[in-house]
Image (tube, rainbow, N blue to C red; front, top):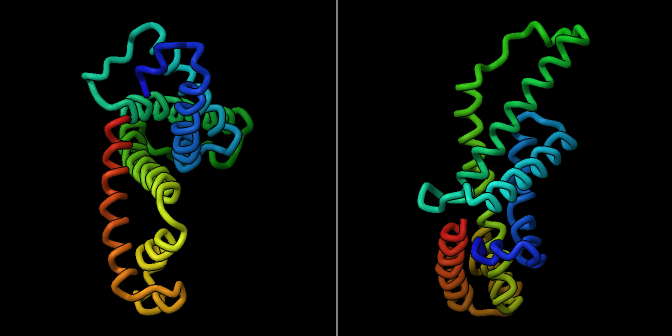
Length: 189
């Protein structure tokens, strides 16, 4: 994906990049305490910062994953947004302005944990979407019903008109494929 971004007029590659990273950055910023509008701004600023750095050859793949680099950018933007909110509260004389705030070091650690959680969920959603595209509807349903809904294989088999063995075989194969897809997505980021 990153090699395709070398061509700055490759709208498909840039669109895929934005589609892949915008939503997790927005969710991360919201969980970091920002409003929906501020979270959207953080996502846009983070992606623009990446694009600028990428064009200036400042991103070095050997120094870590893209997702970690984007986290660094986004977390600085979230912390900056929090500080701006505190200043605005203080200027307005808000009752919350005098309340002690979490130090930036502790906030950074909390944000790291939040990013990991949001990012892993994002990888799972993307991998499940790809899995659905490459699977039959019945097989995917058997998988989701047994894994995500935690329904007994016997109930799923009866509902889908499959044998119990076929349900468990679908579950096993789909879990294996899901792990491979997640691993491949991790390698891209």
